[in-house]
Length: 284
Image (cartoon, rainbow, N blue to C red; front, side, top):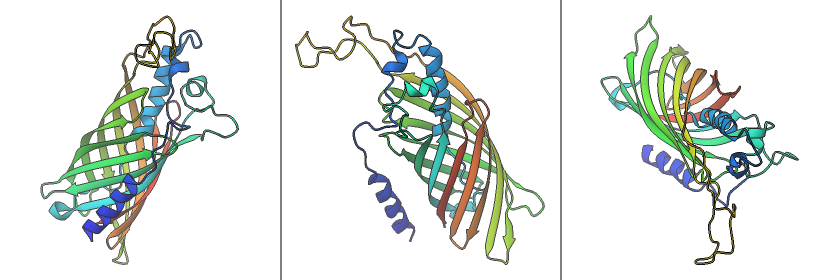
């Protein structure tokens, strides 16, 4: 059963249609050109800060390892709002937010895996595809469960992980996360488990761009045609180092080997971005 579920979810992930650059992909030329946007450096920092909250991994439930037999495979859907009416988003996206062409949210389809070990360690990984883009984010990490299964005490875990953005063309981003989580399992009628959890996450993010302007011959050895700047002056954004704090709260319901979870994340300093996620998973 474990193998069948894994193959099914991987098939779904690999079957996600990846087309030419879509509405929510980045096209940072207008954001970066000092001739059209004199406040470009600050706008890039604002946009990258909010998008750092977009790709931040969710927590997927309780602070438990379930020992050496613990294994979870799940599928989720996450969306995070963006300030798409602001200049820095209008200039950053491939399509402009007019006539409802661009959603107010980045929508992501998510697959995650968690594996527990007998000494309280949990290793996890996730990959997320963003709808109306060619972009994927993903990463790995580990948590250590300090308290687990004590009758009168909550379960507590701490951890760290890496997350990155892939397929962004103009935008590149890497992210290191520190996390702490508290949860408690309640059992109803010996069948249904309710697991509320509360978590804190700190994100260290690095965002930068590729070359956004300059001289490129359209055809080999053709000095006449230009892609952008006839003066041949390239421009790009230097690396921005960003710090974001998040508080997350959620609930997980489990019966037999199946579970459903819902959680919300509030990044304090990411221009009012809010994460919401829901998912189902198979627990072994």
